[in-house]
Image (cartoon, rainbow, N blue to C red; front, side, top):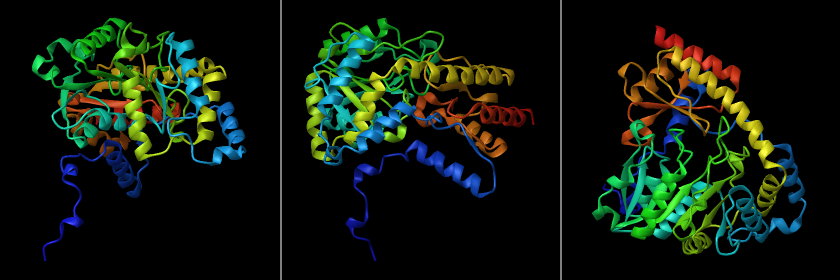
Length: 394
Protein backbone atom coordinates (compact mmCIF):
# COMPACT_ATOMS: atom_id res chain seq x y z
CA UNK A 1 0.00 0.00 0.00
CA UNK A 2 1.31 3.44 -0.89
CA UNK A 3 2.45 5.41 2.16
CA UNK A 4 0.71 8.66 3.02
CA UNK A 5 2.54 11.95 2.61
CA UNK A 6 2.77 12.46 6.38
CA UNK A 7 5.36 9.66 6.51
CA UNK A 8 7.82 11.67 4.42
CA UNK A 9 9.95 14.67 5.36
CA UNK A 10 9.39 18.04 3.72
CA UNK A 11 10.58 18.46 0.14
CA UNK A 12 13.23 20.95 1.29
CA UNK A 13 15.09 18.04 2.89
CA UNK A 14 15.61 16.25 -0.43
CA UNK A 15 18.62 18.26 -1.56
CA UNK A 16 20.17 18.51 1.89
CA UNK A 17 23.40 16.51 2.23
CA UNK A 18 24.23 14.61 5.43
CA UNK A 19 26.04 16.84 7.91
CA UNK A 20 29.78 16.30 7.46
CA UNK A 21 30.72 15.59 11.05
CA UNK A 22 27.81 13.19 11.55
CA UNK A 23 29.26 11.11 8.73
CA UNK A 24 32.74 11.25 10.28
CA UNK A 25 31.30 10.05 13.59
CA UNK A 26 29.79 7.06 11.78
CA UNK A 27 33.13 6.19 10.16
CA UNK A 28 34.92 6.31 13.50
CA UNK A 29 32.24 4.20 15.18
CA UNK A 30 32.44 1.58 12.41
CA UNK A 31 36.22 1.25 12.72
CA UNK A 32 36.12 1.09 16.50
CA UNK A 33 33.44 -1.60 16.45
CA UNK A 34 35.81 -3.59 14.25
CA UNK A 35 38.38 -3.40 17.05
CA UNK A 36 40.63 -0.68 15.63
CA UNK A 37 42.27 2.12 17.61
CA UNK A 38 41.11 5.15 15.63
CA UNK A 39 42.73 8.58 15.98
CA UNK A 40 40.27 11.25 14.87
CA UNK A 41 41.93 14.34 13.38
CA UNK A 42 38.73 15.30 11.61
CA UNK A 43 36.73 17.45 14.00
CA UNK A 44 37.78 20.86 15.34
CA UNK A 45 36.71 20.26 18.93
CA UNK A 46 39.35 21.50 21.42
CA UNK A 47 40.89 18.79 23.59
CA UNK A 48 42.12 21.44 26.05
CA UNK A 49 39.93 22.04 29.12
CA UNK A 50 37.88 25.14 29.76
CA UNK A 51 40.01 27.40 32.02
CA UNK A 52 39.40 26.91 35.75
CA UNK A 53 38.22 30.46 36.44
CA UNK A 54 35.47 30.12 33.82
CA UNK A 55 34.33 26.82 35.30
CA UNK A 56 34.30 28.39 38.77
CA UNK A 57 32.25 31.32 37.51
CA UNK A 58 29.73 28.83 36.14
CA UNK A 59 29.57 27.01 39.48
CA UNK A 60 28.96 30.29 41.28
CA UNK A 61 26.29 31.29 38.78
CA UNK A 62 24.45 28.00 39.34
CA UNK A 63 23.86 29.00 42.96
CA UNK A 64 21.98 32.13 41.86
CA UNK A 65 18.35 31.01 41.82
CA UNK A 66 17.36 33.82 39.47
CA UNK A 67 19.52 32.16 36.82
CA UNK A 68 17.29 29.08 36.89
CA UNK A 69 14.44 30.94 35.20
CA UNK A 70 13.94 31.61 31.50
CA UNK A 71 16.85 33.67 30.16
CA UNK A 72 16.47 36.94 28.27
CA UNK A 73 15.74 36.01 24.65
CA UNK A 74 18.44 38.35 23.34
CA UNK A 75 21.03 37.72 26.05
CA UNK A 76 21.29 39.28 29.48
CA UNK A 77 22.07 42.99 29.72
CA UNK A 78 25.28 42.11 31.58
CA UNK A 79 26.42 39.75 28.81
CA UNK A 80 25.69 42.19 26.02
CA UNK A 81 27.48 44.98 27.89
CA UNK A 82 30.47 42.68 28.39
CA UNK A 83 30.54 41.96 24.66
CA UNK A 84 30.44 45.68 23.88
CA UNK A 85 33.27 46.30 26.36
CA UNK A 86 35.30 43.48 24.81
CA UNK A 87 34.91 44.83 21.27
CA UNK A 88 35.99 48.27 22.47
CA UNK A 89 39.07 46.82 24.21
CA UNK A 90 40.06 44.17 21.67
CA UNK A 91 39.14 45.81 18.36
CA UNK A 92 38.54 49.49 19.10
CA UNK A 93 34.93 49.09 17.95
CA UNK A 94 32.06 50.89 19.71
CA UNK A 95 28.82 48.91 20.01
CA UNK A 96 25.42 49.72 21.46
CA UNK A 97 24.75 46.69 23.70
CA UNK A 98 20.99 47.04 23.21
CA UNK A 99 20.73 47.52 19.44
CA UNK A 100 23.98 46.05 18.13
CA UNK A 101 24.59 42.93 20.26
CA UNK A 102 22.59 39.72 20.64
CA UNK A 103 23.49 36.60 22.62
CA UNK A 104 23.44 33.24 20.84
CA UNK A 105 23.25 29.57 21.77
CA UNK A 106 26.46 29.08 19.80
CA UNK A 107 27.41 30.64 16.45
CA UNK A 108 25.89 27.81 14.42
CA UNK A 109 22.42 28.68 15.69
CA UNK A 110 22.92 32.38 15.03
CA UNK A 111 24.28 31.82 11.53
CA UNK A 112 21.29 29.66 10.61
CA UNK A 113 18.77 32.08 12.08
CA UNK A 114 20.29 35.11 10.38
CA UNK A 115 20.06 33.43 6.97
CA UNK A 116 16.41 32.55 7.62
CA UNK A 117 15.74 36.11 8.75
CA UNK A 118 17.44 37.81 5.81
CA UNK A 119 17.18 35.64 2.68
CA UNK A 120 14.35 33.86 0.92
CA UNK A 121 13.04 32.74 -2.48
CA UNK A 122 14.59 34.71 -5.35
CA UNK A 123 17.51 35.93 -3.22
CA UNK A 124 21.16 35.01 -3.73
CA UNK A 125 23.57 34.32 -0.88
CA UNK A 126 27.27 34.60 -1.72
CA UNK A 127 29.00 31.62 -0.09
CA UNK A 128 32.73 30.78 -0.06
CA UNK A 129 33.75 27.41 -1.48
CA UNK A 130 35.19 25.55 0.40
CA UNK A 131 33.50 26.69 3.60
CA UNK A 132 31.77 25.72 6.82
CA UNK A 133 28.81 23.75 5.40
CA UNK A 134 26.11 25.60 7.36
CA UNK A 135 26.32 28.71 5.15
CA UNK A 136 25.19 26.75 2.10
CA UNK A 137 22.84 24.22 3.66
CA UNK A 138 20.76 26.79 5.54
CA UNK A 139 20.63 28.97 2.42
CA UNK A 140 19.10 25.97 0.67
CA UNK A 141 16.65 25.43 3.53
CA UNK A 142 15.63 29.09 3.21
CA UNK A 143 14.79 28.57 -0.48
CA UNK A 144 17.43 31.14 -1.40
CA UNK A 145 20.15 30.38 -3.95
CA UNK A 146 23.78 29.90 -2.85
CA UNK A 147 26.34 31.37 -5.26
CA UNK A 148 29.80 29.83 -4.75
CA UNK A 149 32.89 32.00 -4.42
CA UNK A 150 35.95 29.83 -5.14
CA UNK A 151 38.75 29.89 -2.56
CA UNK A 152 41.92 28.77 -4.35
CA UNK A 153 45.55 28.68 -3.31
CA UNK A 154 46.57 31.03 -6.14
CA UNK A 155 44.47 33.79 -4.52
CA UNK A 156 45.56 32.98 -0.94
CA UNK A 157 42.15 31.37 -0.35
CA UNK A 158 40.39 34.73 -0.63
CA UNK A 159 37.34 35.07 -2.91
CA UNK A 160 37.76 37.17 -6.02
CA UNK A 161 35.02 39.70 -5.31
CA UNK A 162 35.61 41.48 -8.61
CA UNK A 163 34.71 38.31 -10.52
CA UNK A 164 31.13 38.24 -9.22
CA UNK A 165 28.79 39.17 -12.10
CA UNK A 166 26.67 42.28 -11.64
CA UNK A 167 23.58 40.22 -12.40
CA UNK A 168 24.37 38.12 -9.33
CA UNK A 169 25.22 41.10 -7.14
CA UNK A 170 21.87 42.68 -8.02
CA UNK A 171 20.08 39.70 -6.44
CA UNK A 172 22.51 39.12 -3.56
CA UNK A 173 21.24 39.66 -0.02
CA UNK A 174 24.21 38.29 1.97
CA UNK A 175 27.95 37.76 1.60
CA UNK A 176 29.54 35.23 3.96
CA UNK A 177 33.18 35.49 4.95
CA UNK A 178 35.13 33.57 7.60
CA UNK A 179 38.63 34.73 8.52
CA UNK A 180 40.74 33.26 9.95
CA UNK A 181 39.29 30.61 7.68
CA UNK A 182 37.88 27.16 8.19
CA UNK A 183 38.91 24.88 6.53
CA UNK A 184 41.95 26.48 4.85
CA UNK A 185 43.54 28.34 7.79
CA UNK A 186 43.90 31.42 5.56
CA UNK A 187 43.84 34.97 6.90
CA UNK A 188 42.38 38.13 5.36
CA UNK A 189 44.31 41.41 5.18
CA UNK A 190 42.50 44.62 6.07
CA UNK A 191 42.61 45.68 2.43
CA UNK A 192 40.48 42.70 1.47
CA UNK A 193 37.99 43.34 4.29
CA UNK A 194 37.75 46.97 3.16
CA UNK A 195 37.04 45.80 -0.39
CA UNK A 196 34.27 43.53 0.91
CA UNK A 197 32.71 46.34 2.95
CA UNK A 198 32.74 48.67 -0.04
CA UNK A 199 31.17 46.01 -2.29
CA UNK A 200 28.37 45.44 0.20
CA UNK A 201 27.75 49.16 0.66
CA UNK A 202 27.54 49.65 -3.10
CA UNK A 203 25.14 46.75 -3.72
CA UNK A 204 23.13 46.87 -0.47
CA UNK A 205 24.33 43.43 0.67
CA UNK A 206 24.60 42.27 4.28
CA UNK A 207 28.20 41.30 5.00
CA UNK A 208 28.28 38.38 7.46
CA UNK A 209 31.65 37.64 9.03
CA UNK A 210 32.12 34.43 11.01
CA UNK A 211 34.99 35.26 13.38
CA UNK A 212 35.03 31.94 15.26
CA UNK A 213 38.84 31.76 15.10
CA UNK A 214 39.64 35.41 15.75
CA UNK A 215 41.81 34.68 18.79
CA UNK A 216 43.79 31.80 17.26
CA UNK A 217 46.93 33.22 15.67
CA UNK A 218 50.60 32.25 15.49
CA UNK A 219 53.95 34.01 15.16
CA UNK A 220 52.46 37.24 16.51
CA UNK A 221 49.42 37.36 14.23
CA UNK A 222 46.18 38.84 15.66
CA UNK A 223 43.11 38.85 13.48
CA UNK A 224 41.14 42.07 12.96
CA UNK A 225 37.38 42.44 13.22
CA UNK A 226 35.59 43.38 10.02
CA UNK A 227 33.83 46.05 12.11
CA UNK A 228 37.15 47.90 12.40
CA UNK A 229 36.76 48.92 8.75
CA UNK A 230 35.20 52.42 8.42
CA UNK A 231 31.54 52.16 7.50
CA UNK A 232 31.35 48.44 8.24
CA UNK A 233 28.75 48.76 10.99
CA UNK A 234 26.26 50.01 8.40
CA UNK A 235 26.44 46.76 6.40
CA UNK A 236 28.16 44.07 8.48
CA UNK A 237 27.36 41.57 11.21
CA UNK A 238 30.10 39.59 12.94
CA UNK A 239 29.77 36.34 14.87
CA UNK A 240 32.06 36.01 17.90
CA UNK A 241 32.17 32.54 19.45
CA UNK A 242 33.54 31.43 22.81
CA UNK A 243 33.90 27.83 21.60
CA UNK A 244 37.40 27.85 20.19
CA UNK A 245 39.26 30.64 22.08
CA UNK A 246 38.06 29.52 25.52
CA UNK A 247 37.64 25.77 24.86
CA UNK A 248 33.87 26.05 25.42
CA UNK A 249 32.40 24.17 22.46
CA UNK A 250 29.93 22.27 24.62
CA UNK A 251 28.79 25.36 26.51
CA UNK A 252 27.00 26.81 23.44
CA UNK A 253 27.62 30.52 23.87
CA UNK A 254 28.37 33.21 21.27
CA UNK A 255 27.22 36.64 20.14
CA UNK A 256 26.35 38.45 16.94
CA UNK A 257 27.31 42.11 16.75
CA UNK A 258 27.11 44.90 14.21
CA UNK A 259 24.49 46.40 11.90
CA UNK A 260 21.42 47.16 14.01
CA UNK A 261 18.74 46.23 11.41
CA UNK A 262 20.22 42.74 11.02
CA UNK A 263 20.72 42.29 14.77
CA UNK A 264 17.09 43.28 15.38
CA UNK A 265 15.86 40.87 12.69
CA UNK A 266 17.98 38.07 14.11
CA UNK A 267 16.63 38.73 17.60
CA UNK A 268 13.06 38.79 16.33
CA UNK A 269 13.42 35.41 14.63
CA UNK A 270 15.27 33.90 17.60
CA UNK A 271 12.55 34.96 20.01
CA UNK A 272 10.06 32.97 17.96
CA UNK A 273 12.23 29.85 17.72
CA UNK A 274 14.27 29.48 20.90
CA UNK A 275 15.24 31.08 24.18
CA UNK A 276 18.45 32.91 25.00
CA UNK A 277 21.56 31.13 26.31
CA UNK A 278 21.33 29.78 29.88
CA UNK A 279 22.05 32.81 32.06
CA UNK A 280 24.65 30.96 34.14
CA UNK A 281 26.58 30.19 30.95
CA UNK A 282 26.41 33.89 30.05
CA UNK A 283 27.85 34.74 33.47
CA UNK A 284 30.73 32.33 32.83
CA UNK A 285 31.31 33.95 29.42
CA UNK A 286 31.48 37.36 31.11
CA UNK A 287 34.22 36.00 33.37
CA UNK A 288 36.03 34.67 30.29
CA UNK A 289 36.11 38.14 28.75
CA UNK A 290 37.03 40.03 31.91
CA UNK A 291 39.63 37.86 33.65
CA UNK A 292 42.82 38.21 31.60
CA UNK A 293 41.63 36.54 28.38
CA UNK A 294 44.88 37.26 26.54
CA UNK A 295 46.75 34.96 28.93
CA UNK A 296 44.28 32.19 28.02
CA UNK A 297 44.82 32.84 24.32
CA UNK A 298 48.60 32.89 24.66
CA UNK A 299 48.72 29.53 26.47
CA UNK A 300 46.34 27.95 23.99
CA UNK A 301 48.10 29.30 20.90
CA UNK A 302 51.51 28.12 22.13
CA UNK A 303 50.19 24.57 22.36
CA UNK A 304 48.52 24.65 18.95
CA UNK A 305 51.54 26.27 17.32
CA UNK A 306 53.78 23.44 18.54
CA UNK A 307 51.29 20.93 17.13
CA UNK A 308 51.06 22.86 13.87
CA UNK A 309 54.84 22.83 13.45
CA UNK A 310 54.94 19.09 14.16
CA UNK A 311 52.26 18.33 11.57
CA UNK A 312 53.81 20.55 8.89
CA UNK A 313 57.28 19.06 9.31
CA UNK A 314 55.98 15.49 9.23
CA UNK A 315 53.71 16.04 6.22
CA UNK A 316 56.58 17.61 4.32
CA UNK A 317 58.76 14.61 5.24
CA UNK A 318 56.07 12.44 3.60
CA UNK A 319 56.50 14.47 0.40
CA UNK A 320 53.26 16.42 0.90
CA UNK A 321 53.70 20.18 0.19
CA UNK A 322 51.89 21.44 3.31
CA UNK A 323 52.11 25.11 4.29
CA UNK A 324 51.94 26.40 7.87
CA UNK A 325 48.77 28.42 8.56
CA UNK A 326 49.05 31.74 10.38
CA UNK A 327 45.84 31.08 12.32
CA UNK A 328 43.13 28.54 13.31
CA UNK A 329 43.89 25.03 14.53
CA UNK A 330 43.61 23.48 11.08
CA UNK A 331 46.19 22.33 8.55
CA UNK A 332 44.89 22.29 4.94
CA UNK A 333 47.05 20.23 2.61
CA UNK A 334 46.91 18.57 -0.81
CA UNK A 335 45.82 14.95 -1.00
CA UNK A 336 48.87 12.77 -1.73
CA UNK A 337 49.71 10.88 -4.91
CA UNK A 338 46.94 12.26 -7.08
CA UNK A 339 44.15 10.84 -4.96
CA UNK A 340 40.82 12.62 -4.69
CA UNK A 341 40.00 13.98 -1.25
CA UNK A 342 37.50 11.14 -0.66
CA UNK A 343 40.02 8.51 -1.77
CA UNK A 344 42.72 9.95 0.47
CA UNK A 345 40.42 10.22 3.46
CA UNK A 346 39.28 6.62 3.00
CA UNK A 347 42.89 5.49 2.51
CA UNK A 348 44.05 6.96 5.82
CA UNK A 349 41.05 5.55 7.71
CA UNK A 350 41.39 2.06 6.25
CA UNK A 351 45.21 1.78 6.16
CA UNK A 352 46.20 3.89 9.18
CA UNK A 353 43.04 4.17 11.31
CA UNK A 354 43.44 7.95 11.17
CA UNK A 355 40.52 10.19 10.29
CA UNK A 356 41.30 13.30 8.23
CA UNK A 357 38.54 15.39 6.70
CA UNK A 358 38.07 15.26 2.90
CA UNK A 359 38.16 18.76 1.48
CA UNK A 360 35.35 18.01 -0.99
CA UNK A 361 32.95 17.90 1.97
CA UNK A 362 33.39 21.67 2.26
CA UNK A 363 32.56 22.37 -1.36
CA UNK A 364 33.56 21.69 -4.94
CA UNK A 365 36.77 23.71 -4.66
CA UNK A 366 37.85 21.67 -1.65
CA UNK A 367 38.42 18.72 -3.99
CA UNK A 368 41.98 17.44 -3.83
CA UNK A 369 42.55 18.76 -0.31
CA UNK A 370 42.47 17.34 3.22
CA UNK A 371 42.12 18.98 6.63
CA UNK A 372 43.75 18.00 9.90
CA UNK A 373 42.48 19.46 13.18
CA UNK A 374 45.19 20.07 15.78
CA UNK A 375 42.86 19.05 18.59
CA UNK A 376 44.66 15.90 19.71
CA UNK A 377 47.37 15.82 22.36
CA UNK A 378 50.90 15.64 20.98
CA UNK A 379 51.68 11.93 21.68
CA UNK A 380 48.53 10.84 19.85
CA UNK A 381 49.22 13.34 17.08
CA UNK A 382 52.71 11.85 16.62
CA UNK A 383 51.22 8.36 16.53
CA UNK A 384 48.70 9.43 13.88
CA UNK A 385 51.44 10.95 11.74
CA UNK A 386 53.59 7.83 12.13
CA UNK A 387 50.70 5.70 10.93
CA UNK A 388 50.05 7.98 7.96
CA UNK A 389 53.73 7.87 6.98
CA UNK A 390 53.82 4.07 7.21
CA UNK A 391 50.65 3.74 5.14
CA UNK A 392 52.10 5.92 2.39
CA UNK A 393 55.43 4.08 2.49
CA UNK A 394 53.67 0.74 2.13
